[in-house]
Length: 481
Image (cartoon, rainbow, N blue to C red; front, side, top):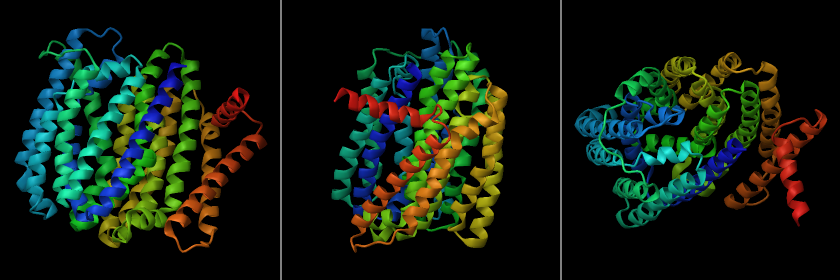
């Protein structure tokens, strides 16, 4: 019960955050220009790279540790603080190199400000990790939603006043300061400097750093390629398309995986129950990921033109492929994320991520060279799909699930998504209003997806799965009324 309640809170949290983020992106895209987003993307790419190189997995070790002491918490906080200060200094020092790589002189200011943001964020209270460990997802929900609301309420007004990338930078800076304040307001723990458990974290990081670094590169190698071969405005369009695809699926998978981690840990001594919970979680995420990711790809053109505006037209082909890629990665995250780490198969998880990188990196470079930026998202989508069979193999070796169990959880949502796409793309617009056309296509897609999913479920015998959970919720709702 805690597992599904935690997953529900994680999904609700991400939807709320992504809804705020979507509204923010829509407003900012109307006020600012693609090049402004491209400048910010340059800095956040380097932050992600440096963070992945130094991610000790301190939060994950705290959640996995059965007997957490104050020394564990203080050491984790000290590691985060030192790491953030070092990254901030490196980021600021690397600003001249970034100017040369991206061929953009304004990157100098971006890197200085974002270096300060990273240094400040290291002061956050480690007690918020304990919130997740204690399965207090309601408080975790409040913190993340409050944080997003703060960024929205500062960045949007600044955009209307400044009309350039400085609105995005100052929004990040103000948000970092207020996030630190909120973590101490929302949790009573008061960390102190300590390295008493440093050896434990170093042992854990031996497996976690390659995993986290590989995961970052595998997820961002395409953006690095675009940043090198394209203009600042093209990078901005690509990055916004990537962010929109992440809003729909990819990050949802990561956050649900994060919520499932402590729940999986509690079932380690009950392998059958763990396997059953995994299959149910995979089926539910497949429904959400294929519906949102493939659905967004199907209406990418209408969405960009109606919501972002014509100046973002170059983002359409990017969004079409990246949305599908996001759906694949979301499912892959459940397959090879928390379940492998919590069962002690970190090395296997890292191997899968580096395998995806080994496919995606040369594919993106070759596609970018021969077909330009338009070929890059196609290359990384194909690479992500090729990794799925290997992820399935890894899971069957970690817990008592079979190939049949996994295929049974995935095939109905996948087929429903294909039927939905055919219906949406076959529909001919009957209105000149871009927003109304988008609304009709979204409604049609949702209706076709749910109908196909339920028909397939009935035809195959109404077995256990997300469809049964949806029917039960509807029945309970009507019973109450």
